[in-house]
Image (cartoon, rainbow, N blue to C red; front, side, top):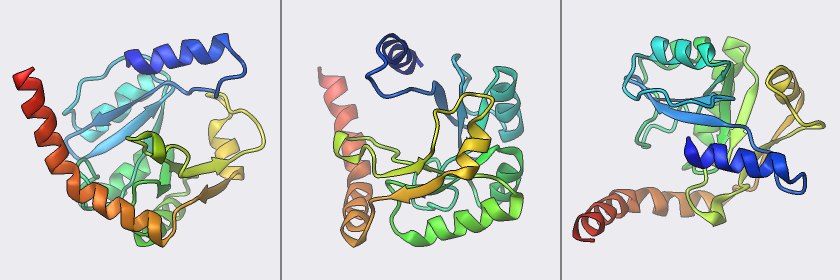
Length: 188
């Protein structure tokens, strides 16, 4: 939360910088959800319904990220996916770290089935991944207008065969990267 709130402060102080929506990516017992417009920590590991309730109690909107990216750590469990879509405000239909377009197509049908606006996000973990997926909108959203503006916007991305191939390589290297970070932290 600290980094996000710092970025929000910088963005508010300098209109030339990109706009920032504060939020939290939260690991629940069923998988990950994102709380948009949240400015406080929420403990991880809560049941899905309780996590959604806490996000809403803090004035947030609930975003369901990468619901069909089954190889990803933190993906929503198959059993909880429909319930999560029903509880959320937005469903991500394009993720910049996706392994192919099939998961996005399934996510689009999930959003449609539950009447939710379609979201998109880079899910960037490296600088080169920033801006790979987005929703093009005509005005700057606020907490009150975000759902309407995103619903009227257009989901776009720069992913193609090469981008998906690179994502496969990054996902395959993730366990090794995590192990390396643990080793180097312990020896430092």
